[in-house]
Length: 243
Length: 280
Ligand SMILES: Nc1ncnc2c1ncn2[C@@H]1O[C@H](COP(=O)(O)OP(=O)(O)OP(=O)(O)O)[C@@H](O)[C@H]1O
Ligand SMILES: [Mg+2]
Image (cartoon, rainbow over all chains, first blue to last red):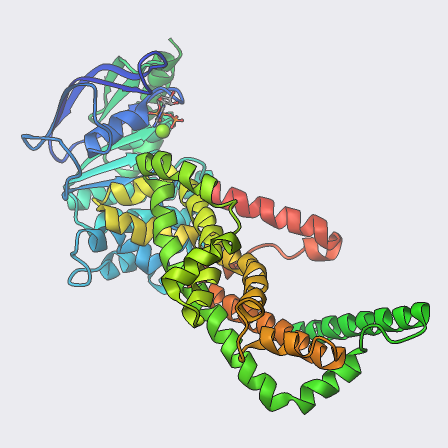
């Protein structure tokens, strides 16, 4: 369970303070999935980074599994906006990076995950040699390698072509159902939010505040995309966002 | 044409230009001013063994200095570049001390290091240190937030941040500054092997000794140029090993621009798609 209460985040020194997040609160049961959607620059990444322990909030309470968040957690994986791969490391090294940084490599490694994501034969390539979709999958492999119980994702599929986007959305859905991690993801894609988010939180313009919460209990199957309910929610969500 | 052919052509053109200059000067002044390349090469052959000894002495001095300067300047420069408070404290000191020509510190260096080879290495290292330090600092300042967040989010400690992000990201700039500093290193090497630090070994001493028989002196100059070339080649090899990621190309990159556009436009094109690759 993740609990966020009265979260406030701002950047810069006094005088030129940029307020990014203002009084945001929500909670997610473990194993559930939550989408954060909002206009660009509204503070989505800031909220995610606060949950990941990368950004210290000015005010508010954050807890994961009943423990206060203060710093990085070993059971939480973060996938960054552009996969966050290091260009000087090969696929293999990138995928094992999180394990290595927490001294779990080489006792544990990402071989099985790379195999599962169809990346095994590319293990010695550098990110510059991969397509965008493959890079994202390497980022996913890195996150999965630590067997996280919380998966935080910052626009994991932004700027991919539509087909690849859909394919990786399907992958996320299967992985989520298979592995049962709690998923919090940021997106600016309405259909993605409806396809992957059990609950969708719509944020306002900066500083981010919660504008609406849309429940989406029927998600969870690959063919949800073709259903009437899916389209109804997409339309509803679009209307909420344009308000 | 193959790359090695270009290299040979390049050296040949250089020698022809030298020969041309030598002939022109001789014609203008009515007597030989600088030796032509063939004479100098003959002298290289004649003094081969002696030049070999001097080459090794000079190469050792310059090589050791470059290694010492790099080993000290890189960690220091990366830290100054990355740690903001250290930067504020140290950078003014660098800017004040860097413009002082290291040569004016010679008397002090003599007192500390005596009159042997250690003072030569100290002088050259000191000058190279600043060049590499400033590049390393600059490179460490430009690290992308995304790459830092990528390791920080996995719980990297400070050493791991340097080891996995800051150092590898800065290596290309560090190697470039090492290459640039070879020129300065050569100048100081020559200075440190001639008066007032005259010795009996090293290419500088050989050139100075034969100052009035230019054919032989130029044999020394050629050998010095060769030393520079060897160092550049070594640094290229090191770069290809430690920055291997910079030499890969996306394998499915389109080929057609090479046939349709001249090289310059093609390069711009490739750079552009490379950038969009990176930024997604
Ligand atoms: N380190 C920082 N220093 C100063 N300002 C920052 C910093 N990080 C973010 N901001 C500002 O805070 C605001 C919210 O940023 P944030 O990255 O959380 O938004 P976002 O919703 O993720 O944006 P995007 O859609 O571009 O990803 C922005 O106006 C941004 O300029
Ligand atoms: Mg963002």
